[in-house]
Every structure is written in C-alpha cells, then in structure tokens.
Amino acid sequence: MDQFAERRSRLLNEITDGAIVVPAGHLATRNHDVEFEFRQVSPFWYLTGFGEPDAIAVLRPGSEKPYALFVLPRDPKLETWTGLRTGVEAAQEKFGADVAFTTTELDTELPKLLADYEQVYYALGTDQKLDALLTDQSVKRRRMAPRGDKALNSIVDPMPVIDQMRLIKSPLEVECLQKAIDITAAGFDVAFKTAKPSVFEFEVQAEMEHEFRGRGSERNGYPSILASGANSCILHYISNRDRMDDGSLLLVDAGAEYEMYSADITRTWPVNGTFSPEQKDVYEVVLAANEAGIDAAKPGNGAMDVHDVALKVLTQGLLDLGALKGDLDALITERGFLPYYMHGTSHWLGLDVHDSGIYRTGGRTGPSIKLEAGMVLTVEPGLYFGPFAEDAPERLKGIGIRTEDDVLITEDGNRVLTSAVPKTVSEVEAAASVN
Ligand SMILES: [Mn+2]
Image (cartoon, rainbow, N blue to C red; front, side, top):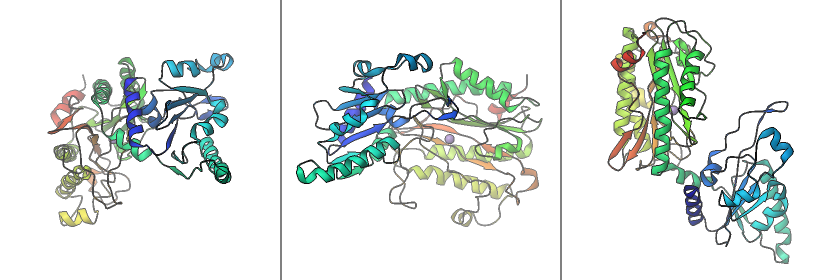
C-alpha cells in the first residue's frame, strides 16, 4: 500500500489549488443480469490500489484528512451473489483512507468535502454521476456565492498530471512489468510448440493463456491476437477462429497482466517451422527495423525518433522487396509506405497496454517528448501485404509480419525486457520446429 500512498502525496504536491476527484470504473452489463468481467480503471488503481467498482477517491490539498474514499456499502444479500466488499471500515484500515463513506452518501458528503475549494480537478465525462453532481454543485455554489459560499469556479482535468506521473515507472513497477513479460514469454514458448498445420488459432491461444494463468497472471492485458495466413494483415484480428495452413505464418500479439501491469509482445513465425524465401525476406526487413528502433530508444532521443528510424528501414525494405518504387525520402514524406505500414512503431506500456502519457508537445506536428530513464515503450514495426494492398507484388500477398519488444529506457541506453523471446530467423524457426 506504500506505493499508492506515496503517489497520492506526490499528486497532492503537484496539485495544490483544488480538490482532486478520481472515480473507479463501473460494471458493464453483458446481458440481463450478467456483467462483463470487471477490471479496475488504471488511474484510480494507480492512486488507490482499490479494486472494487463504483468507488471514488477524493484528495484534498491542505486538509488534515486529505484522502477520502467512497466505497460500496456492505450488503450481505448482494455480497452473497457478487462477492465480499471492503466497506468503509476496511477502506480506512487497509487502504489508508483518512475518511471513508459509502457510495450512497455521495450526494450529501462530497459537496461538504469540496466546499472549501474553488477548483475541482476532475476529468469531465469519465463518470456520469460525478458529471451531474459537480456541475450541479457549481450552479448551487454560484447561486450562494453572494451570501458567502465559495464559488466553484472551475473543473479542471487532473489527467495530464496523473498521466505524467505514470509515464516514469518506479523500480517496483518495472519489476511487475518484467514479471508480466516473463510470464508472457513462457506462454510464447508454449505457443511456438503448439502451433502446427491444421490446428485452430484458438487452440494455440488456449494453451498459451493456460500457461499465463498457471504462472500467476489473472487476466490478459488485452485480447490475444492469433492471426495465421492473411489474418496476420488484420492489425487487431481477435476472432482467432481459423485453422492454420501448412506454409502459413502465425502472428501472435499477446500480453499477460501481472499485478495490473501488462506485457505486449508480438512474434511471427512459420507454422511448419520453416520460412518460405519470401516470408524470410519480409521477416528480415521487419527484424532490422525492430533492431534499429530499439537502438534509437535511449535518453535524449525523442519518442518519435524510434518510429522515424524504424520507418526508414521499413521503407527501404519495401523498395528492396519491389513493393515500392521511387525515392526513399520522398516515399517517407509523401507516406507512400501506408499501404504496407499503417500504424505507429511505439506506445507507452504500463498498467494499460497503451499506457497513458503524451508523445508530442505543441500539436500533431510538434516536437516529440524526450525519452527518459524509467519510461517503458514498445518497439513494434511490421509489414502487411493485406487484402487492400492491391498493388503488392503477387509473391508477397497474404504475408503480415510484426515483431514487438518492450523496452525500458535506462540512464545509459535501454534494457530490452522481452529479450528472452526468440526473435531472429534461426531462433524462431528452432522454437517453432514441429516435433
Ligand atoms: Mn503493442
């Protein structure tokens, strides 16, 4: 719990001119009285370590009791059906709240907690009940301001501050990420062995995720992508329902979650254990782009440098493969690579697979932010000769390859957290060889 308390006090040092209100997530109905599996939203988790839905954290700078937590009330009848709740006593004892209320007291207690603050930091639009309550408060307090109440002058988004905190990972967070990655790597070992011609994609998924669970991962960080053949050209193919053909590639993009932190790894390999010459040609280009991107991931470089470096290798590769014609620099500035490479090369990684944090300042074309020790990002170039790339050379059609690693920026460079997963042509073929 210490890490959560430390983050709250850091946030209270950053935001001193208003109360901060951060809501938990809510259950989503799947059908009738059945809900989707609940996973706490990350900003709330980051500050509280509290995993139940509908809770609300209130942080009040300058207060004697700065941390208030609203939690679902104890309810034996409901808890019999849906599980035990923490309740207000344990919210204080176990979760460090200075004061705790039930969510049924929100309408009466939240206005009191906020009464002394002219600003409230809350991300409008994230919680319908809070949207209504806070805008209602601002109306009421404006009305009563002439009689001496403090007006609620503004509702400001706290997320940029929280996102910035989340961007730099503590050693403990890196440990959790490494553990999630190690579990995922073990799952990939199983996937390499399970994938064979005529096996279904979802069968490989089941074996891989069985390994995740067996090693202590509660859930995945995102839906696993197991895309064989031309499915590999669909970036977020998650139906995973096809049978794998002899001679086809399998692209697996998966990440186990551990202590709420997600891995994000992609490897592509031949289902029968041997690349065809054209598959290997494309693979080598993507691998070179991945390695160039990783080399560029170091302090002082911009986050977008990783993309620019990888993109250059990919575009040169597309020229070499005969998929593009023309001048390298012109193809990059005019985005001629788009039919074959339509996504970015990196994103932040942490509690969320696409973790919070900005990539640029000053607009869409503004400068990239500088990489710093403690940031974790993916490096995931790919090439896709999919159904909509009609001008692709015939021999490359249906090939989709992505190679994705997770990289921690260190003081003097980087550490590839995913280095245990086979990656070169020979490593991948050895891992995948049918036995
Ligand atoms: Mn990714």
